Image 1: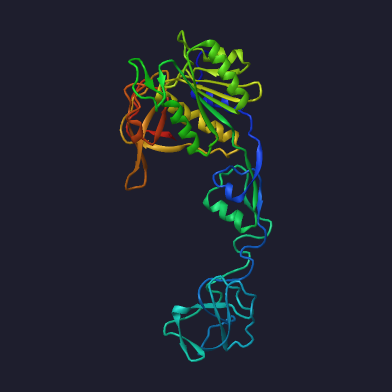
Image 2: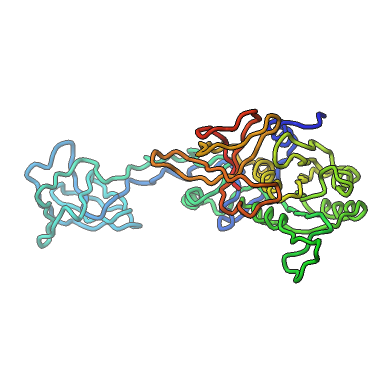
Length: 404
């Protein structure tokens, strides 16, 4: 295995080895945001009948114009949810409500705004010229019974939940949510709730940032933990978490320092190393492997910017892939200003995205001083990926965007 692999090669290796999360059936109320694992077909024609689209009257036009007919006797009323009535007399009309079944014998709906009542008759106002089949939602015009409506691999959003409900799907097969442990390593780390810090301490933030990123993509079964810089303790604690969780995300202890014990501990636990070190900045030391029970293991660098870059570029897409989410092409943006590159490494640069008057997505670079400087990241939307180059990427460069 080469010392460094490219970003594209790293992505290929990760997705090639990823297991697929199991499926489960959930009630419709719990399905929003989940990844669909079955084909959903139309329960019946939609609409299931010729449907009235406006409050007003239904009349019989036939193939010709109304001619002198401008006044109609009200022969009945058709409300939504009631069985269809019949218009027997073409000189009469049926009062109708939006969503009602079109009365048999009718082929035109005139909106109430284009009529006036005159005793027991409805009169068309001046200028009203009805057309045959207007304001009628024809049976089966949306879809036919058994048509495919939703395909596996889509995330169930607002419209999809509505389609499921409209077609009588009370339970649906979705990808199971993995149990994820997010582990921070380091003797210097203190919890956010700790009071006064020691001179050599910093607050632990990577685990909370990663957990927030995971929950933002629908992975809610997240557990945070920490371990000190000790090989035996690292082996013991990582072994416990591997036994309890489907995914292990580790922050820190993955580089080449004397106290970076994570790769050695994972090797001792039988985790198969798929890749270690990528030709990128920041995030070069990233490690990925598969555990003995097909657990997914990401070991990310400890610097906060590196952590968020690797999470956005590899971790989140990988877990969505394992869920069966259909792959999507990266979002493309145009650099609003130049950005530094490197001749040998892919560079990931934080950006803020906005749109110009022509609708172009423009990305303004917000470079950070070091991979530990994450105080400016809250003003960014994600990172752009810039290929290795000996020249600065100029304004106007088209780049792939990965949102946080």
